[in-house]
Length: 93
Image 1 (spheres, rainbow, N blue to C red):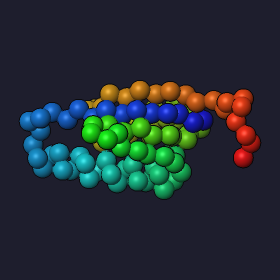
Image 2 (cartoon, rainbow, N blue to C red):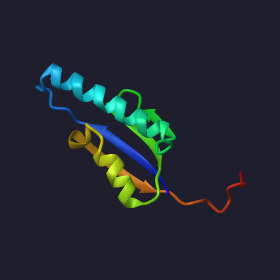
Image 3 (tube, rainbow, N blue to C red):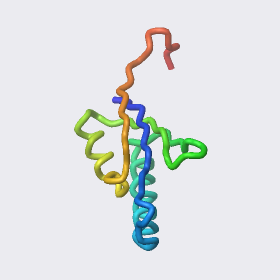
Image 4 (tube, helix red, strand yellow):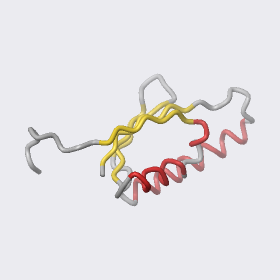
């Protein structure tokens, strides 16, 4: 199943710099693992914001929740999930 995901990150401004650096390093490692394993085929930064949009490809809603809730930044994110369906006018691959 494909999902369009928007994630806005809201780190506390007073977060300890070492904690912030650790969170960001673990986030990078985790998200790149998901990409290498094929669950996260598209990832784009939204220019000028601490936010991104992604296309995630997982088996079902439960796997999506597991992937998203596994993000180290998950507690600091506002996430919008839009399930995607094949458009009837799409030319077949």
